[in-house]
Amino acid sequence: MRIALAQIVSTPDPGHNLGLVEEQVRAAAASGARLVVFPEATMCCFGVSLTPVAEPLDGPWGSRVRELAADAGLTVVAGMFTPADDGRVRNTLLATGGGVEAAYDKIHLFDAFGFAESDTVAPGTVPVTVDVDGLTVGLTTCYDLRFPGLFQELGSRGATVIVAPASWGAGPGKREQWDLLVRARALDSTAFVAACDQADPATVGRDAGRAPTGIGASAVAGPLGNLVDQLDDKPGLLVVDVDPAEVDAARKTVPVLANRRF
Image (cartoon, rainbow, N blue to C red; front, side):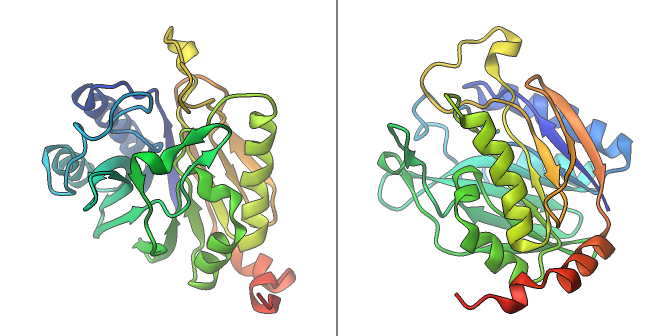
């Protein structure tokens, strides 16, 4: 299956960001991709109040993404914010198009490096997989990359590909951690991990501020931890072919999912 990672720089304006989604969905469809993955916070960048922009999955923003996916005939995964019951929002992945209609609420919230996502975001509780052209795809978001158990669970549920939309915070050692974690989680799950980050805002002349707004370096890692391909820090579209036979072979050679005890 051909997948595309759309590394963009989201703005505080959801309408503007829909224009970026439209542009990249069309480019992904032209490349022959069956799945296009956008970053966490595609709807609206971090660093601004999220409550005013949060919408239900069937609100105007999600509905437009749904239309774009249907028109292109592929599956889109994009980060948005939906209202929570307690006045906070949920950090949600919308997966839509190509026979898919699902959502994943980020389970592990980024309460680290001096940032407290849980102040404004309510956590999800349920791992989610979807079926894209007969392949099981697991959904994760950003800080989830630091928790191997979720990736092992998704692998045990049959995920061949696990997507990880992100808005990775910059800072000392953070790029090294990103590269390491993407490849490690692929090894943990013996699956392809497709991690799509926000591009570095500085590459388009914007101040990143203190919020986690992305460093680029979107990457696809293979089921034995090899780096398949990777972008730099600027906006771009990464197109990669993934072969489920590689996952089958890896799970026979290194059966960590079958052998694990915890």
